[in-house]
Each structure stands twice: as structure tokens, then as C-alpha cells.
Length: 390
Image (cartoon, rainbow, N blue to C red; front, side):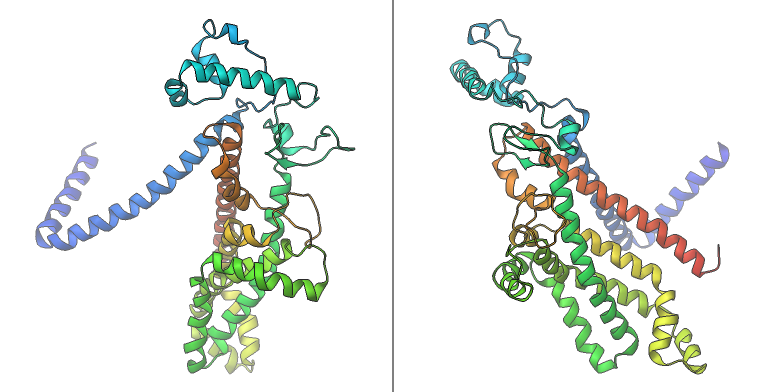
């Protein structure tokens, strides 16, 4: 304890000494520290907010059955307020501000709605249970079990598999298109291009990052979709292939910039040694520089994945927005981000559709967090292996 107290006293003495000798610099340092800390806190608060809104679906306490146990209008006064609020699907604030006549009218509407769908075998199914979210279900009118995302009918259907597949299809196409181009450009600019060529080529590629995603979406919707359809001859004009190529244009500057920095940071003596031993510039680049920079290159690809799976406007405008399960890249598709953007404004605060969209947001958070965590582990292992620590 005495050692700890002595250490604290020395730290405070050092801080006070620095504060007296260079007060302006000390204030700037404290300001930068607080700004950095506030950024971390903001990210954490956003995560907590999204998780809180999605929690009822995660815990299985939310209910979306079209028909539930009916409370007759005559039992309005004898029903506990908490049970009545849950039955009417109102928030606490809405329940407090709504008058008695409006609540009675809402009860009558629920009774009428129940009469319309009570004969449907799916009317009492909780469509936001985990089984309905992940497994196929044979809905009324269908010949076999299907994965369906359709939150607009009397019986809302919330299977997330079509959205997961749509997001992965667009992301994979984007990476297959953008990573080879971005890495090739990074290798050329960092190792093979002359100073004059590098002077205009590098900022030109990085300038792609400044194009708004809505402009890329318009370009994909009006120009790219028609051009690619005339070349490949597929049926659906807007599909995962078009969305993926357009997403790739947004991913290229991200992968290029980080990969180029990693390749440039490889010591020049490596290349000079390889050239002195008779290698050509291409051999030195491919067999010496690229392996030495592989942790940074891998980090660039992972950040490109995060950029692709989190993009909204491009996929909203170019994917066709059809939530179907299909292995074909030339069928229309729908991603999780496009679904959130298109449907969130139409939901009622606190009801099951609103909760489901926040669950999709939480899934996106989890995917990007886990991919970054996995990439960090792989990068450290590759770095340790290259430095001979393993």
C-alpha cells in the first residue's frame, strides 16, 4: 500500500509540474484525451442502444402473433393497466397519453382483425421466435416450407436467412471484384511506378473514396445495370452481381490506401538485396515485398469486408430488393442494411417490426466486431511469424 501511495503521489507531482511549466500544451493534451475517450464512449452507447432495443427479440419475450387471447371491451375496467398496455401494443408514454375512448376503439379494432385472420393456421404463430427467424416454415398457401421476410401482410413473416444470404452475396462479389484491382494498384504504385506516375495515380485512386455512395448507387442503377445486362444477358436487371460490382467501387480506395501504406513500409533494403542477387523488380515485389507486408494487406481486406457489408445506399438502389433465397448472383436480392433503411421509417416505435430491425443492426454489429477480432488475431500471428517470434 505504501508503494502504491508513493507512486500516486509521484504521478500527481509530475502532472502538477507539467501543468505549471507548459499549461497550454497540458490543456491541449487533456482535450485530445477527452475527445478520444468520448469517441469510444459514443460507440459503446450506440451498441448499448441497439442491443437494448433488440433485447426482447433476443430473449424471446416479444410477441408477434396476429391473433392473441382477446380481451373483451366489457373487461376494460377490470383488466390491469400493464396487461392492457401490452395487449394494445402501446408504449408506456402512448398508454398514458391516450384517452379511454381511443383505447376502447383500439380494442374493437383488434377484435375485428382477429376475426379476419383467426381461421389462418399461422395466426397464432409467434413469427419473431428463433425457430421462425432461422428455419423454413410452410405458410398457408405454400406447397413447401419457405424462408420468407414479409413484414407487411396481416401475418408478419420475419425469417432472416434471405437477408443474410443477400448480404453475403453482395459482399463476396464486391471483394472478388475490388481486392485484386486494389492490391494490384497498390503493388504497382508502391513498388514499380515512377515518381511522376505515382504523384497523380495514388490521389486519383484515393479520390474514389470521396464519391458519395448515393452517387455510386445512381450510377449502378441507371448505367451499370443496363450495361452488364446487355453483356451477360441475365433476366433481372438489378441483382446481387450489379450491387456487388458497385459496392466494389466503394471498397477499392479503402483496400488500396491501407495496402499501399503496408507495402511502402517494407524496408527498401529488402528490395535492394533481392535485386542485387539477380531478381527482376516484379520477382522482388511478388516474392519479397508482398510476403513481408502480408499482415497489413490482410488488414486492408478485412476493412474492405466491413465497408462492403455495412454499405446501405448502393445496395438499396442496385440490388433489386427482393428477399429471396437463391444461389444465383443474377437474381434480385436484399441485404440487411437495405432492409433497415427501407423499413425503419414505417414501423411503430416499440412494436415487433421495430424490434426486428434493431436485431438486424445488432447482427451487423456482431459480424463486423467478430471479423475485426479474428483479423486482429491472424495479423498478430502473421507478424510474429514474419519476425521469427514463433
